[in-house]
Image (cartoon, rainbow, N blue to C red; front, side):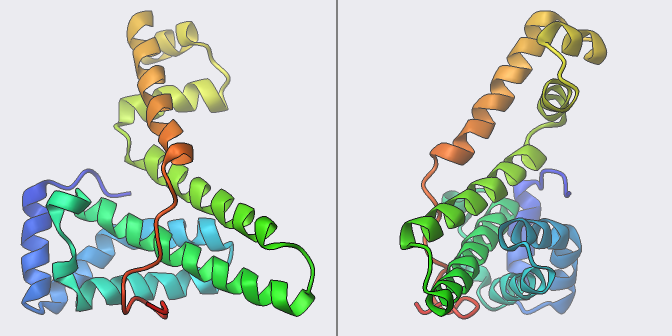
Length: 195
């Protein structure tokens, strides 16, 4: 994953895209393609569909660089991740609705639960990969290696208080994956969106 991008880089990239510099799109793709593809794949669980969403996201960014507003969207990375989640969830809902109609089984409630779970999982993945390395490492030790805060502190070479602080902050960030309302539909003219 790309490291935090400085706001200056984001502004310069947006300006280059607005001027139609194809090299800028290539750089943006090189930096964020794995984020976009992995997020889409996490939601859709389908390689071809994730490839399609990846093309749609970068196509949208190329055609609409002025849609990015750093004051509202935050970093360019966050904006691209949000576009990806929205488009992937839109595609999942579309595919599941078709399958629901063909099978004639299940309910719209089940469909919405599946879409919600996929969106939350994609957001959680993004949060974990975006958080500062010290927080991420503490969470990985506690979750995957089942270490308590004392063991985490010893492994990281920090005080127990610092280990507790890192775990608490990491969990607070991760908890927003469940509490934040699902992003709305894709923006107008975005990859097959009906808007």
